[in-house]
Length: 239
Image 1 (cartoon, rainbow, N blue to C red):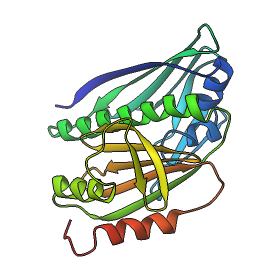
Image 2: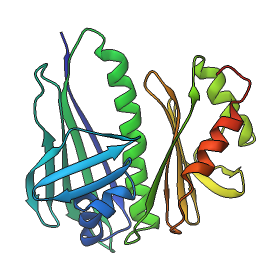
Image 3: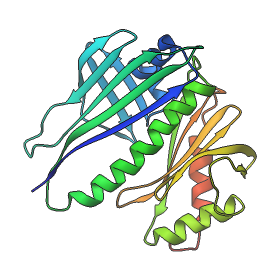
Image 4: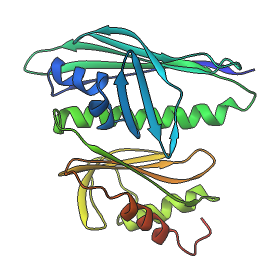
């Protein structure tokens, strides 16, 4: 069967249209809020995540400061994902940014993948808004780390929340190892924390492990550190 979808998100951010455009249409900008490492060149957006390459996404619209869109090709089974961004300057240095993600998921078991995609996109868009309001113009180093395979997700999230001092809510200040930050987003499969020079994010891997997908603004490469942190957190639990 499969399922066609369209997921809209929008926010007014404390950033200029120029800063929004940089964040949505350049590799360093996309690195600073989306997932993995990104490159925009020769009319194609490429994303590398977790040691693999996502399907290339061809730019279909590029009107500076207003409209940017790109889409993967349709696979043999009909699968594709397209992203569209609309930018509108507002008063007092703010900007309305709207992101619409659409596409098609094949197969009779599309529901679980759609749920994971929907909840993940909620967190990524919240990160875009957070980045533009607090870090606009700064380029981040993306860090991705994978914990052990998870078999009991409620328990895995409880373990992570316990490490933060209890189940967090947006606005709560929490400590994560040696870092301290404010929770800016949480849903049933993701968690986002903004620190002074980093955004720390945890994702429920689809049929896999807990994933740390952080963006760091201090230039350090902490991939191995976070890999070890996740392994220590879930050691002996049979997560």
